[in-house]
Image (cartoon, rainbow, N blue to C red; front, top):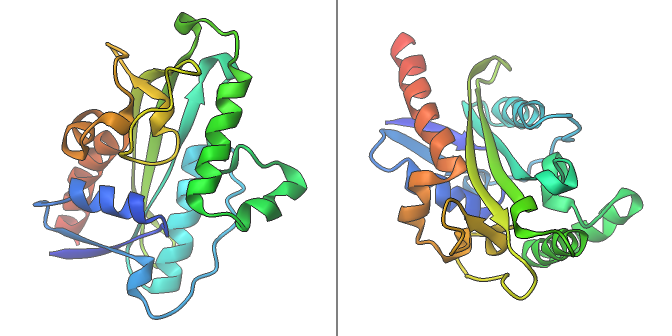
Length: 218
């Protein structure tokens, strides 16, 4: 069993990753497993890979253990790729980031979803195509990147009144109608079903193979 730290303080994400890793021989622990607080690194990268690398290196060094970090978000074609790397705080720009920090994750999620729906008012279904993307990076305490993977999850953003729907998942899940049928949001899918086709599920399965290779070599 190999123990790896997960570079997130999002309980929903930790639970989802632990479920995906069941039976892999990898024991994933969260930052809350340590009896200390961690300073969050500044995620100022221009890409998901940049930000995942920043987090993996920072928390691997801070904990002295191999660290798995992911940076994920929503890409909406009609919004020219936004929310993108600022998906987690899309409703807050500039000085308003201070306000975001004072809100719960659920409150931030709701405001982010409201902004996306507002900006897509009047956009036809066929032009509301979107995808979740997840990039994962594994780093060791020296700062060396050991592996990186990426997964995509295709769909579109539903219309106001059609969404939000569902209470599974988090973030933009209640808005995201899953391709190819576009009949259910990803928040209406059971975790076991979602994990088969989700961006995070695809990135994790690739990462499991990479981790097995890394530890075999060491």
